[in-house]
Image 1 (spheres, protein in one colour):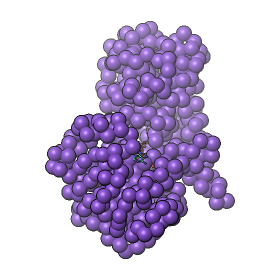
Image 2 (cartoon, rainbow, N blue to C red):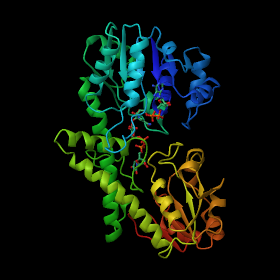
Image 3 (spheres, rainbow, N blue to C red):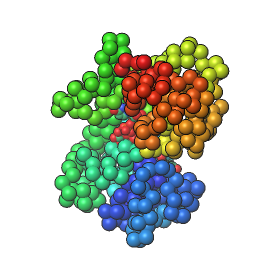
Image 4 (spheres, rainbow, N blue to C red):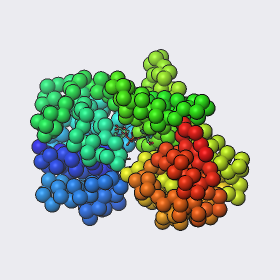
Length: 437
Ligand code: NAD
Ligand code: UGA
């Protein structure tokens, strides 16, 4: 099958590469010429483990190509996927559909049909019908269907998530669209990965409900962690004990500095907005958004306390700035709240992140970037672990503690513990939802 993928970001590129790996002929298009140049040169412009190798394999096999020309990409395709951004719209918290609607109009202008226009971007309930109306208005003679195909991959594990999904969700309103979508996903279906076919609105709702639920689960455990700190319980044991109940499940119960990323923050905001507009407030989601902001502020207070009540003149080393490990994505990362608070309070901030510097430099003015965690920690008054990259899990803590002016550790991802920190020579250790040192 011939497929066009509009948008070569975290979702579009992974989806395009994986569809081509299924054996489909895929043309990926982006209106950012710099991205297309990189991709045509065989380089992936983002950091996603395994993606560059899989991409080049499929390019070499002749199934995958890149272009900046949407008309060329859409020519003769049976399915066009829209995988462009839907960021928070300034001012009202709604998802900004400008890019989705612009892409739909551009497709309408060049498509010859018959084809199915598939929205992969996360979009508010009712958007696929709007896409349908926009395309029909722009090209009344076009023979087309629309389909909603929300994506559930996680950055850092994107290929694995795409190739081995818990489920694929497809929202359609015609048997023809359902048929094309099952053809596209047949390799997964044949390997027994479930495909759930729904109406358009339910597919759109599943995506928002799933993300809001996961954000709620994280926020719930972060709230319990705060109480654990007050009462002497250990959040790691609590999470484990809760997660063993199959009705609860062990995933997404890691307490931390608050969820971040390109999706949970914007999708919870959009869902809250949709609820308000429909006189059906999403009260739990609204509370989650508020509490997650408070969690990040609580982290700043924790660091403040570890710096004896003042950041002024303190050297603070921060390990990890991306919103999670194995990505270079900085969108809504807790680091964007915590580091400016340190800098604003007069701290000298020294940062190390395996992939975060490229995006982080512009977003975090006034910090010094170091190429190793050990160099970042030299002479520091406080070491903060903000993202749990694997390379931070087995640090030589003794070496670090002995190189610091004041060996104090804020482990905001609970990857070490008080005993380990104390044995390494740290005089203070704070983590999340556990007794400190
Ligand atoms: P992104 O910002 O990384 O990529 C979007 C790309 O689309 C950019 O490269 C941009 O240049 C391109 N683009 C925009 N308008 C275009 C047009 N008219 N023609 C061609 N290219 C165009 O975004 P992303 O993180 O991949 O997210 C895309 C969508 O997928 C969002 O709705 C998001 O909520 C959803 N989603 C993201 C993830 C994730 O992990 N990032 C996971 C699931 C769903
Ligand atoms: C999330 C969802 O997991 C994906 O299913 C979804 O497709 C995607 O959003 C999206 O819609 O874009 P992602 O944002 O890549 O994926 O990363 P997650 O692993 O979900 O982590 C999100 C945030 O929650 C991170 O800041 C992470 O540190 C935090 N988190 C996650 C916790 O604090 N505790 C946990 O137990 C899990």
